[in-house]
Image (cartoon, rainbow, N blue to C red; front, top):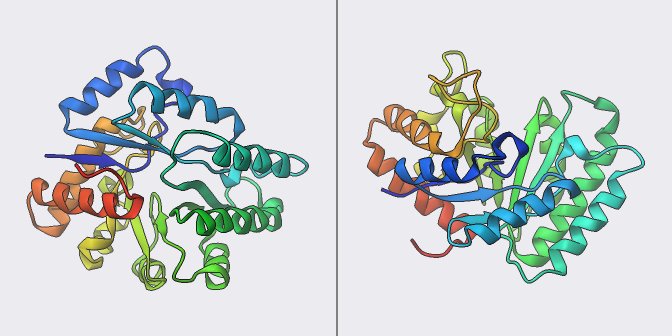
Length: 262
């Protein structure tokens, strides 16, 4: 069985000193491939380090997270990330993570839109998918995608926690997937009412580690090995085996991110 964690921050300081052990736990849990979303300039070197240490398992992205789109700073951050994207021998598999977050600071919505437009333009020019973060901001996301979506744009709304109408609207854009993580295991997470109605070919698995641990680890540090728990939850909701879910979601991830054939 081959599982792919399509969104993990295993490079973050929460894993310093035991990253190798966490990677070993991934292998034991059949999580063979990890996709690493960048969040700001400070995280670039950490993403690169994991890409270099595990080149056949870890694949990086470049992007500016909306929580790091800050007044008087975001344009310089974006410039450095764009320079890294173009001036490196490394291959990135997506632009991400990018998007909208109105949980912490609503005053940055305007510049979040500007940053999003710029990064979507990178994705289109480089023929890369986008990995989208959205928290308390679906209206902003839909406003942006209504403007920017076309046949050249593809991507995933990671850590999807919306309702069936929001899921349908995302999928109606044509080339988008839903990233399903630990929230699917929460009693009041709401995804039990959504996932049975989502086409199997439009779902990828993720952890968003070290955040949003699945049950029974909720409230503790998340890690990529727990992708297997998410896969089992999806299997339960789809009424199929975990092996079938692994085959489907791994195939979806390979197609979306143009990963090497497994």
